Amino acid sequence: MGLKQNLHNIREKYRGTKMAPAFNALHTFLYTPNDTAHGGTHIKAADDLKRTMNTVIMALVPCLIFGMFNAGYQHYLAVGEIEAVTSGFFSSEFWTLQNFSLGFWKILPILLISYGVGLGIEFLFAVIKGHEVEEGYLVTGMLVPLIVPIDIPLWMLVVAVAFGVVIGKEVFGGTGMNILNPALTIRAFLFFAYPTWMSGDKVWVEGATERAKEIIAGSNADAISGETILGGLAQSHPIDYSVADMFFGFIPGSIGETSTLLILLGGLFLIFTKIGSWRIMLSSVIGALVMGYIFNLVVAAGWITETSNFYGLMNTEFWHHLLIGGMAFGIVYMATDPVTASQTNKGKWIYGFLIGFISIMIRVFNPAYPEGVMLAILLMNVFAPTIDHYVVQGNVKRRLKRGKLKTA
Image (cartoon, rainbow, N blue to C red; front, side):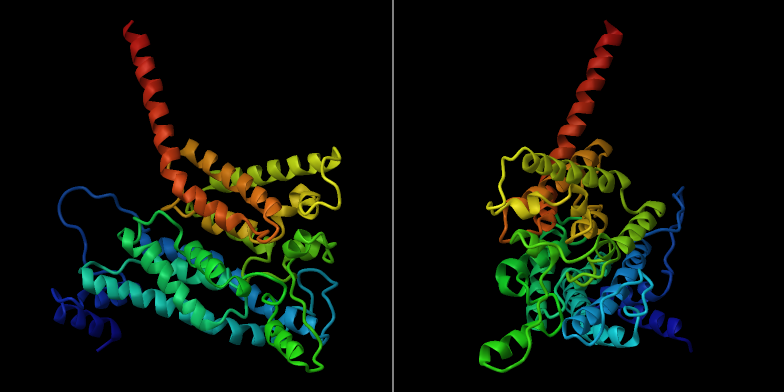
């Protein structure tokens, strides 16, 4: 008797009980559901929520794999065991088993905890409330490991995931009902609850935090600096990385956010599969470029001097903002969340533009937290229904006006 038949028999055995949603979820995750619609006319399509989530995961996998290589690369580069990449994206110094092995074993526990805790809570709520397990956390579970530092303590991640799933999602009714992006809710919780583990120059390179503790304790260990480009610019430090390094992703940062190249390819894949909104992506880029260019004009006019706390990020080339930090990752994978984003076409343009515009504004005016895309997306998540409301009301008024003109 095959696995599919065994799962089917278990489903039938527990049909009508509280445990039925849990077994149904396992069965439908592995196989096509046996239940089909009968009678009447139905729209036939190959896509459903599970396939949509799996498509987004496919777009995230390259960022995950690259993050594993980059985690090892940044560590061995910091301790002086390897030389910096000099020969482009396919450099032999980067794509080594040594780099991948270190990154794999550091990121695997983060991935397992993200899915284990998150899906565990999803199953628990499904059993308690008697509804089917929703597949919405499949993407969130992949996003969370990609937006946290490599050395994040695992117990902090457990607490944050539990908070994000319960408070950011389940209390609103589950998948499709939440007003905030769950993955960003988890990251926001981590940042405000444990700020020293989410910022600074000792959290982005594996082993840097432990080495810092040894130095404080009085050992002779060499320091490891894992400062991100945004962190350095916020302190008006010069950039030590080339544009190619920033575009390919050979820089410190959250696990999956460094490679703009792979994020761009993932965005094109989501647009091709009609899952990600090109309107939101494009308008977010335009908003970021406009705000960055305005700041460049302010510096060029001499209104801000080099002694200002804002000078470093304000003087950054406006288009460089798309290559550093989590701007590109947030725009492609989080701003386009169909549940928390605007639903109307005009609303998507407004929603996306404000995300990019506000992100750069937060970066510049908040040196203590130079990465602003998380807060910008969460803020616009809250205002997305309002934007859609006024867009719809505007359309209604225009149609009523046209109707009056025709009857006049």
